[in-house]
Image (cartoon, rainbow, N blue to C red):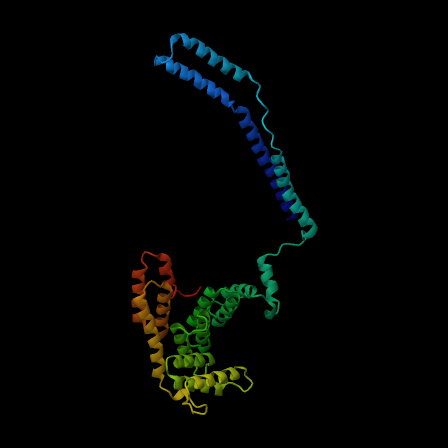
Length: 368
């Protein structure tokens, strides 16, 4: 391999010399064929004398002497020695620099680099990474390992779940969402996957729970009433929607579920106290357990947020990302009729904007 790089450096140097040399030759040739500009002046004088004579503006007795004098000047100018073309020493300096650059680069590589290091094919690196402790791997390395394992386990939702986590760590949030949704399609009755999707969407919205996120949390709680993330965010949404008592009841239930040494207990206690202070509620006010509250309240809240998103899009329809969220939300809620209607409306709006239409349709695409 080092021979290839040395050969490439020498070829680069040779190409630089040829380019500068041909450029210098072209400049000399141009200077050699260039004509003394005074010759054109004398030729123009002869032409003007002929023009004046034809129009009878120059007396015949003066025509001969004027033509003779102009011709004499033309011949004298043509017989004058031509100056040598100007030299451009800077061209050879450029040639020297262009030649030296690749040669110096190759020399520095031989001196400071590692030309003896063998090639490291990607397949071999995957094998090496698979033998390391997962905690020592970089996110991109973990993504490569998990992606390589998918062909052998295409229907493993846990594999897609861990792949999504690695993709988030690597900064590839688009692929992470697709992996999470693929995991959910493979295991739609796993509460942890719905909860992970909701938490991901909250993270993408700078901590705010969108209608899509709340719908995912609602599915998670329906499958596991004790899911911590689902109970927390759904209760917070109730407080934000004005159902302070219902939200605090959910947070109180969550507080009871956390272990005594769980660091989240201190955060939850502080948040509960802050809400009670903000709404002037007594700190010892008993809260109704969340399990005893009507399930319809929670569903009504989520439906209200989805309806609010739909109303916003009706007022300001030029929002392909918003239509994608609405289509996904209807899908999570299981409202196929409204999902189809929203998708049809988006197709009409963005029929002449294929990129925006793909954004909306991606909400229905299964992850690869």
